[in-house]
Length: 594
Image 1 (tube, rainbow, N blue to C red):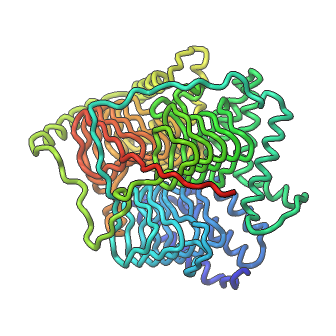
Image 2: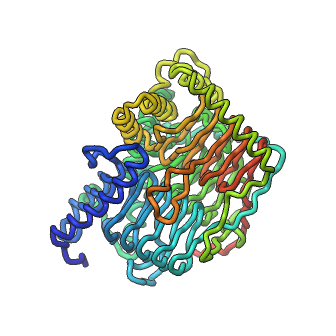
Image 3: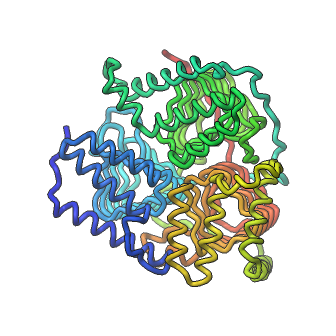
């Protein structure tokens, strides 16, 4: 049953409070407040959610669904129309944000975070299986709240936290992780792609697409019996979930028949429209279900019944090459990858495997396994804010690193725009192992280089004092690629962002920085103070590599040649040549009951 519609004065009050918080944030980030605030993706995301919920309260469900899907297409944020959020909502980077439940005033949701459902009948006020958040709650980068839990007012979930239990008021939740630091990253193996693919026939491709529609309707009507009709077909076809899968199916069909360039065009269109990176040469069986396609990355092969939840990834550990499936995982039938989890590397994942939230898997599993995180990686709740930025190196070494970074920064300032773009393009080609000169003209169309290209121009305009032009280029970059690269960032040549959707970067870095899918670098949100948010950003050296689902946050310093494996959240100083590997997950067997 839909709630009572809100009066127009109440809606105006909600939007006014949203605008006031966003203005403080934008003035600190760009130095001015844009005239047309509706063009900003942060406000557009909140505005479309208010509109969609207002339509839903009035009983206009069709208009509510259209507004919500328009929000996903334009901003990448998936906010349920039943999600009740009070005034003062701030979402600086909407791409990859998913919200459902009930939230109080002044909620702050930072990049690639959100709230989700657990399929339980328990209702604590936000809906069956959904959380309830108090006022002034902050969800930091790569954090999540899952299930029917209550988050007290003023609580802060620091980067990387997944809350599955109640958190009291004004408490901090942090992740307990102990990083291994081996001498060097492991050597990548290679897997072989199956010689034949049944999707070469259009009849088989259409059959797989029908299975995808049936799977979607089975999940939507989990507890009800449905009968396929034209209305249900139109309802499923009009979703962003179905649009992304359809574009992938057609691009894979074209790739199997030797039309790689045309399949690549559709894959590029899929990246621009739905912000999902599904490789055309990846083979996925029927019954694919991915309700939140924004930021999704899949490269490899999978069987039937694959389920990919929000911000989940399947790709190689390092190489961004999308034209060769060697080094990418192979998944069995009925595999489920929960939110913010990933499967990386060249190995085979068995049938009926379920990855819990926040699992970064890089090893084989036996058949019928449930993969869980170890208890020591769960969040720790305390009233005192923890200190993460304590240096593990001597003060003299730290001062030497800072002075070296300033010298390299002065050298980078002398480089021209064309020199920086040339280094970026050469580094991208080197990592992708593509040196075909005949395709040089189309590199500017790839989202991986388009986001860097627009960032360089916005940074050039920002240095020249043309802040409004820099802001327009930043907004264009976000709407096209889904990435947030602050124009004031000082980054040396050789910047590579293979999968831009959901990536947020605000730092000072050296040359040859590589940021993989759904990773970020930026400051910490200090106790809800928007004025101090941009004061202390990370400082990175040369040749830094961030794997998938990684993050560097706060006033920290990273040395040269630092490598972060998938799932690493760094909030302390790291010395030169360090290799940070996350905690390996625990694998537990389970009994499958159909």
